[in-house]
Image (cartoon, rainbow over the protein chains, first blue to last red):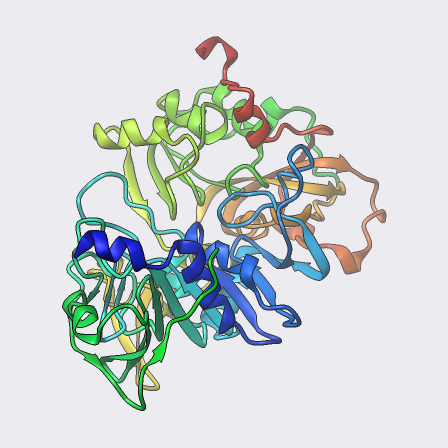
Amino acid sequence: MSEQLNAIKLSNAQIAWRAAQDIEDGSYVNLGIGFPEMIAKFQPQGRDVVYHTENGVLGFGKAPPEGEEDWDLINAGKKAITLKPGSAFFHHADSFAMVRGGHLDLAVLGAYQVAETGDLANWSTGRGGVPAVGGAMDLVHGAKRVAVVTDHVTKTGEPKLVKHCTMPLTGVGCVTRIYTSLAVVDIDQGHFLLREKLAALSFDDLQALTGATLNIAGGISDLDTPKL
Amino acid sequence: MDKTLSSLAEAVSGIGDGATIMIGGFGGSGAPIELIHALIDRGSRNLTVINNNAGNGHVGIAAMIEQNMISKMICSFPRSADPKVFTDLYLSGGIELDLVPQGTLAERIRAGGAGIPAFYTPTGFGTDLAVGKPIAEFEGRSYVQERWLKADFALIKAELGDPMGNLTYRMAARNFNPLMAMAAERTIAQVSSLVPLGEIDPESVVTPGIFVDGLVEISTPKQEEILNRRGARYPESAA
C-alpha cells in the first residue's frame, strides 16, 4: 500500500496549490512558518490578499534577492521579506490583537495530528527535547477559518487525522478544514466531512488511512491539482 | 529634561545579579546587541531574561547564556538557526525555561506596563500550557487567565530618540520593544540616531518618553543575523 500511496499522493507544493485556491479575494491571511508559507506562491491571479506575519507586518511580498536583505524586515520565520504598497508595521500586542480579536480571515498551519473534533496538535511531539510554541496557540484562536496542510499519514503510515490527538494539543476544536496529500476534509460539528479525494484512491482505502470516520454529505469531488 | 547617557557601561551599570530583564527584539531584528554586550562586559549573573527567543549563534542573548549569566528564560520560541547554546544548557538542566505562547507573552508584557494584573485569553485553553491556570467562560467560550509580566530593567532598541526619550522604530524591529519599554522599572534604549528635541514629529512618536529612563546613541548598530553569518562570538576572546 505505501509504495502505491507514494506514487499517487500530492506533493507539498500540490497541497499548497489546493489550499491557495480557497483564499478569497480581499482576505487577510497568516501562513505558518515552513510548509504553509508555500501557499502564497500559488495565490490565484486577480485575488487581492494581504498577508500578516505575527512579528508585526501586514502586506508583505516576496523574499528579496540574495544580498539585498534588510534584517529589520523579516517574517515570523525570520526570513527576509519585502513590502507591497499599503503595508503597515505594528508592535507585537497589536499583531496578536489582530489574531485573537478575530480580524484575520484565514490562518494556515502544519500539523502532527488533527482530531475529528477540530483539536490540533502541532507544537510538540511530547517526546522531550526543547519545547517551542511561538504563535501557534494564538493563531488557532481568532482567525475566521483555521486550515491545516499536511500529509495524510505519518512517515511510518500512521493516520494524522485521528479520533483523539495523542500528542500535546495546540488548541481545542479550532481547525475548520484540512488539506492533505490525499483529500480535503472539513471539520463539521465534531466529525470529519470528506469533500474531495484523489480519483485514484477508493473511499475504502482512504478510510483505512484515516483514524476516524469520514462522513459524506452531498457527494465527493475529485481532488485535482496541476503537476508542480 | 535630558535622559541621554554617556556610555553603554553607564547604561547597564545598575543591572545587578538576580535582576529580571526584558530584552527587545524578535530574532535579530530590534535586538539591542550593543546593550546586551555591555551587560556581558558588566558580568551580572543569575538573571531572568524575557525575550521571544533564547538566542542564536554566539552573540547577543546566546552569548549571555554561554557566559552563564542567565538562570531562567521566559520566551515563546527557544529555537533558531543555531540554538545550540541554549539547547545544550537546557538539556543538561543548567537553565530554566518558562514557555509562553507568543501572543500571550506580548499581552502579559503589555498588561504589566498598563497596570492590568491579569486578563483572559482563548490562547492555550485545553493545552499543557494552561495547566493550573484559572479558567472562566465568557459568552459560551472558555478562556485562560494569564498574569501581567514586569521586569526590573528593559533593554530595547529604537531608531530615533530625543533627549526626553521619545522613540520611533525601524520596520519590523518594533516588535516587543514598545511593550517592554512600558513594563520595566527602568527602561534603557539604544537609539541609532539621537536627535534634538522637536525633531521627532509628535504624530510619529511610537514610544512616548514617559516610558523611557535612559538613552544611549549607537549610530551604526550591529545586526545579529549578519554577525552570525560571519560566525562572530562575544566576547571575541570566547572563540
